[in-house]
Length: 158
Image (tube, rainbow, N blue to C red; front, side, top):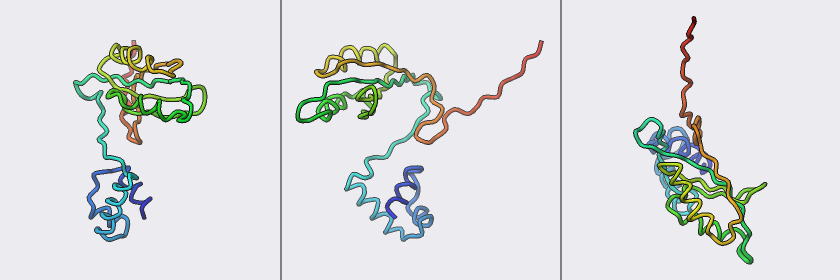
């Protein structure tokens, strides 16, 4: 039942316990206890609200930064990841396979602020060999939610 609860709340973390219990065919207390246990075990790590910032007056720029590093003797990539994720600007850090070691995701108000983060904070860390920054131009789907509805085009004829 734990996996079923996780799938259910992953799609709607605000689901009412009573409704969740009905959908799962379980008692409300059983669902509540399972969720509490998974929160204590850090299986459930937090609850987030997905916001389409393009529909607000708030300017946001998202960047995905590829980072190549030299792993640390004895700790591999973990110590480097720990240092990177301490920065408030960093939204996510992922260890990757392939041509680079980490993907770092950050959000700032401007591209200049992202550039400042990369040049003055990220690239100055020991073990960082190089970085490549990619800016998100438009989000179509984020965490399973479609953000960008297809706009209807008006046909213009001469």
